[in-house]
Image 1: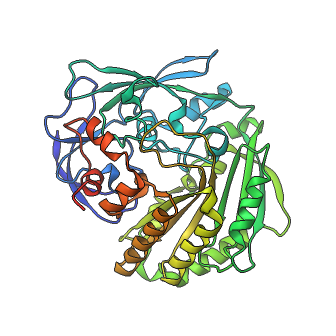
Image 2: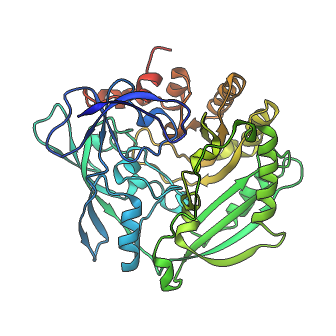
Length: 434
């Protein structure tokens, strides 16, 4: 056990004190603890203020692989980067990946991450065949499969149901390390961007991956739509691209704000697109993980950090509600860089607290929110809830207990299944008395 020290989430908006321990698979800490992978969550779901963080990233072995079925047996601390680097040259890739490869398998399961292919694949948890789970109240580890009740409280269980030791995960065949990518510019007319994005998405049958960047500060909600599918690509593309740039210092406060966000969005829009659709072949790595090319990119938001606000609203409400929420945030002066829009499909997630639902999701990076920003986000929460949607716990740093319970009415089932020795700053915050 290491001495107490300060730690922070990837969003860097605040610091809390922890003790640190490392998972060895045989013993659990005596004090209240929280299993943690690489800490890439933006908010406090990966923090345990005043308690212990049980780091799992040292348990990172790839134990076995069945070439016939594509099932990989690995320890929970193995990263998506490690798996992709080893398995891609053999013709296999992860079936679902989030926006960074620096995530552990345990973290991907605990948050039931999604990717650009949710409409055809669903969430990461759908490809988990078995989990070995160690609990403080059990003498021996549990071997969980999809038929076990504890499986649904471990997938998207926010790390609260126990310490994941190892996992059996189904990979998928791919033809090579390339992606055939097509880009389309959309929007520009007043309020037309959401309709344009949804129409492009609906017209993307045959494309496994779809995602859009959207300028939330533009009244026309202009953006760039990307779609892709696996392709062969040259041998040199098998190796992941190293970070070409590392931010050595925090961005100064004067660089961040509504004006600079508007200028950045305009520049990104014009640099990333042409008026006519563009098709080209690109390596897998920058297509799925563009920000991984910049080491310490979270420093771009300055020492005060940032939060990410990601919500989803059902399909039937998307055309009306998404523009209304974004207009509310724009009119409230909430600055946002690199907002991402995505259509979720109808494939049900296996976890009871999984975030995706059939509908439209938008994720916004918001630098160092002040009291006015937080008030505007509280109002946005209510608009999301009234539409039947929800906010993503893995990226949250501020939702109220009352809103969390509206978004996730089955939260008490996770509380009942929670390992009594495990807690997190997030869980204590959102389950406190409203």
